Amino acid sequence: MILKTYTYFIDERGNKLSVFKDFKRYKFLVLIVLILTFANTIGELLLPKMMSQIIDVGVTDQNISYILRLGTLMIGVTLITILVRASAAYFSAKTSMLFSRDLRKRMFNKVNRMTFDETEYFSISSLITRTTNDIAQIEQLVLMGLRPLARAPLTFIGGLFMAFTTSVRLSMIVFVSLPFLAIVLYFVIKVVVPYFPRLQKALDHINLLLRQRLTGLKVIRAFSRDKQEEESFEDANDKYYQIGLKVNKVMQTINPILTLILNLSIVATLLLGVRFVQQGTLSIGALMAFVQYITQVLNAVIMVTRMMTMLPRSVASIDRVKAVLNYPSRSVGGSNVLNEPITSVKAQDLTFYYPDANLPALENLNFSVYKGEVMGIIGGTGSGKSTLLKLFMQFYDPSEGKLLINDQAIDTLNPESVREKISYVPQQNYFFSDSVRGNLFYSNPDASDEKMLDSLETAQAMQFLPKEKPLEKTVARGGRNYSGGQRQRLAISRALTRPASLYVFDDSFSALDYKTDYELRLALQGKLNDAATIIVAQRVATIRHANKILVLENGKVQGLGSHDELMQSNQIYREIAISQGEEEDV
Ligand SMILES: Nc1ncnc2c1ncn2[C@@H]1O[C@H](COP(=O)(O)OP(=O)(O)OP(=O)(O)O)[C@@H](O)[C@H]1O
Picture 1 (cartoon, rainbow, N blue to C red):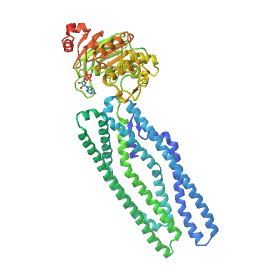
Picture 2 (picture 1 turned 45 degrees about the horizontal axis):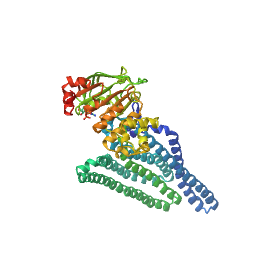
Picture 3 (picture 1 turned 135 degrees about the horizontal axis):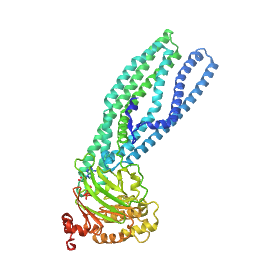
Picture 4 (picture 1 turned 30 degrees about the horizontal axis):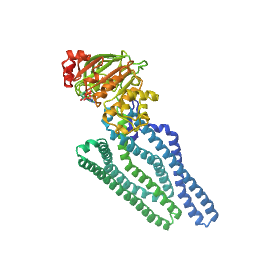
């Protein structure tokens, strides 16, 4: 019950769900496990009774046929119990594997829908640990918990009942042993619990350092930080080792203590039991059965204690998985589906604040771009250029004012239906370890070879690709077998391969040399006439032929017009242009 309350989370639609919600789906399997476990326990409880009957009736009276009859029955019950036990193990493994598969899928879907800053909030390494290690931990809890949790109460109550019916006086030993086991259980909960969240955190830190090390390899090498990185990793690794060692030390001390309590209880049973046998108040068979029952009863408690040592670790994992599933993802956009191609984009007093920011990243922007037009955006670093593009891509909704797509407010439009019509080249490109064709397919799975070759030609990528089978050329993960400028051209080819009505380039020409930049712009002319194009650029040369240029400064529009108009009337633009050697055009 506590676990159930603890593991609730709220889904995207505000429904209250449990991390263990998928169990409902497997209720049939769970029922089979419970029935088999019940049958298994009954079998285990019957066997000592049968054995005592064989000794007390068969052996004492030298009744061979009775021994044979009951012996055969015992073998039958044993075989069935083994079979039932193996089936219960199989079905509980199946349930736990299916459960963890579904939980991983739910986590993946949640992470898949997260925005960039939401993934940053959790940190990518932590999301990986949560989806793999933490879910594996929960899977173990289900696997180890399903049968023992059903078995322990059954064995405890059944065993206690059988022990009482065998000998009430000997049963008192159980009540002496139980408080000792309760003390161990309390110690486990008190001492071990606090270590597990720390252990998982330490593992997160190791993952973070490893990831940082692998992705930041060049920076680390360039600044000769290898030694410091090794030291930080050693510290994190050592911390994990220290916490892990402490936890294991406690756990390893608990196991012999539990075995000691069990064995002392058996010794006490035998000492007392033998005396009762000598007095003639207890049969030998009953004493032997009793030893088995007390072992079963105490083992049930020990099983729960061992489960308890596992529970804190799993609870820490449940907590971490729940935090991701529970995270209130920002819902962006609305439900209106945009069916027709984008023919206009307009901003009316558009203002945007990043979540938790006091100052706006964009303030009172007004502009419009129509089908067939090119709008350039220029401005200093941090002026809000990428932020504006993020609003087009519906990573965020506008805070105030309006951003209209085909005269419909963007926050009423379904994001998938808008993104489908946009081809976007982000500032940071990413490529998959695949062929050029595989990477271009990513933007348009229906693209023909002609379309892809044409895009490569337009983006000036054929200059560095082999003439023979350029589409088969391999691209390493992240595109690291190409230079920065070559990667930009591949990214532009990928964007051009996608049929879209709005093309958005975020600083995608910055690594090109002037000649290639010029040739690419020439080739682009006439290719995107049916679409609207928005180009964020650092260089005036890249956007000087645009129909209009938006000059941004600290999130505000400082100018809007053609290159010539801005050169005449806009001081900021003129200064940028002159600093880039464009003065002769004034
Ligand atoms: N995720 C974010 N959360 C909060 N503030 C942000 C976030 N991203 C950007 N900002 C802030 O918004 C402002 C505009 O950033 P933006 O990335 O749009 O600038 P930019 O013009 O594209 O700069 P650059 O040319 O350097 O890429 C900056 O002051 C930046 O600090």
